[in-house]
Length: 113
Image 1 (cartoon, one colour):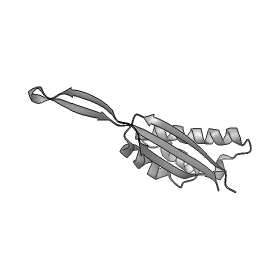
Image 2 (cartoon, helix red, strand yellow; image 1 turned 90 degrees about the horizontal axis):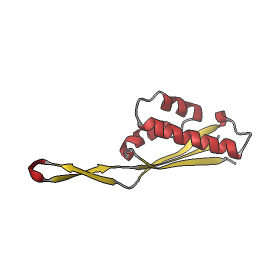
Image 3 (cartoon, rainbow, N blue to C red; image 1 turned 90 degrees about the vertical axis):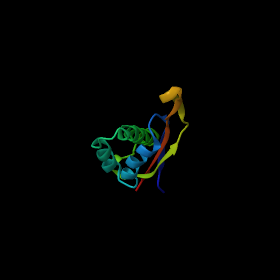
Image 4 (cartoon, one colour; image 1 turned 60 degrees about the vertical axis):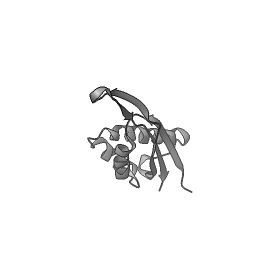
């Protein structure tokens, strides 16, 4: 039976489109490979995903003291759209334009092999 552990970061202040590019790189990889990809990735979204992945590993170690890092892989990694924060700024000819500040919900699940 495969043990699964998950972690979530809700309302992350980054666009889901940007984070999905990073999540696609680590989905299905072994935990050590996924962490090395995230640590060597220059994108800002990699830090968000790395923190969620480390949290899932901490949940596994907290729940099962015999858990070994080498046994885990990223079984599920999903980025959902969060609420949009609306801001605005002045535009030409006295108009007002909306600025949409997008948020993400990052869900990661790790399982044993």
